[in-house]
Length: 155
Image (cartoon, rainbow, N blue to C red; front, side, top):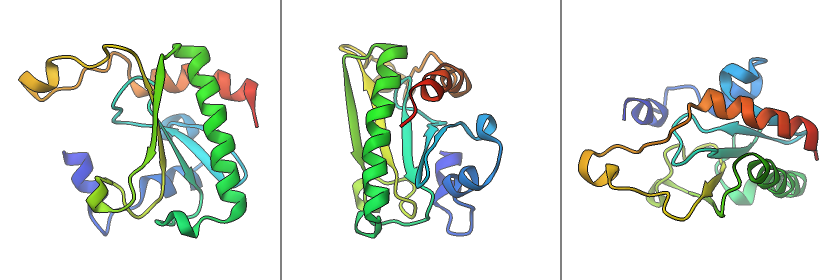
């Protein structure tokens, strides 16, 4: 919650903009850079391999995406699914956008697409009994595993 509250503060720097402009990809968990959009491993994942795909531009509306950004986000989504399939062998994916605070967007000012690998039975009792989600891999480890796939696959 500390992180979520910080991200939602209007005066805090957008973590996606920070990651996009800095040349510290491993530290910022940037696993792929396209010409218009990039991919970040989620620091607070719902599941192993949870990725965020975002345009470099700080925009909040899907309608503000240029044609080039729209096309590249979809191309990067396909690339992300390939990389995740190769590394984790998921049985399915949740892919989506939370547009606006009412939709559950934690970061509503910078459009981003969630890509979450899923497996049958990947939910458990922990969130019910202890308000805890068990994800057995640290985001830095996810970055290391996926980086090699993104470097090899490319657009």
